[in-house]
Length: 205
Image (cartoon, rainbow, N blue to C red; front, side):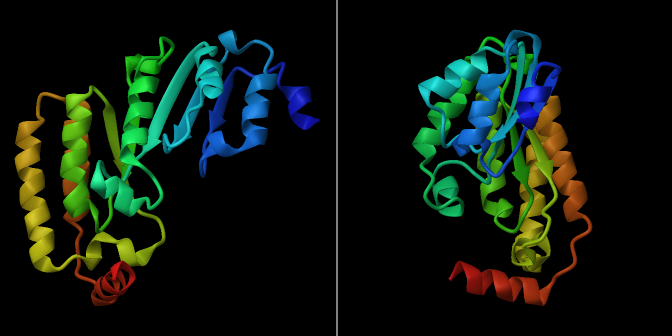
């Protein structure tokens, strides 16, 4: 009832998760908006679900800003987001990329910098570069066993070396370059955390 009262006065909708596109109430709310062609929709998704009905619904909005949450690509995605299938996620990203109302004509990707990023971030940067996707890197909140401080000193140094090489590789692409620089700055605060390392090893095993 509340949404029915306010949906005539909306000009910008922010839909975040979890995964909002599997929530029937969220989809019903979007369907209830009377004039989506006058409204901006900002959506965060993991791109595991994109039915024809939802795709058509997203295309109706005046402007659509989409951010896909990814820890990695290919086998990294399937391992880190168990139950997810990369081929489906990838196809959904490409499908979203074809929407005519997409902000800047690009899908965005958000990656949370964490212990596993030392293996998964570089392939993700390459994927975004190849497919004209904007990437942003953010901090990990909670889940201390996944913090970058759980890396050994050798793992941390190798990750730094890889990112320094990537900084030169992507210096012509502002968004990708910025993601690399942010990661380097974050890793500069590294202090080895033995408990985080131990917790990561036990959890991964």
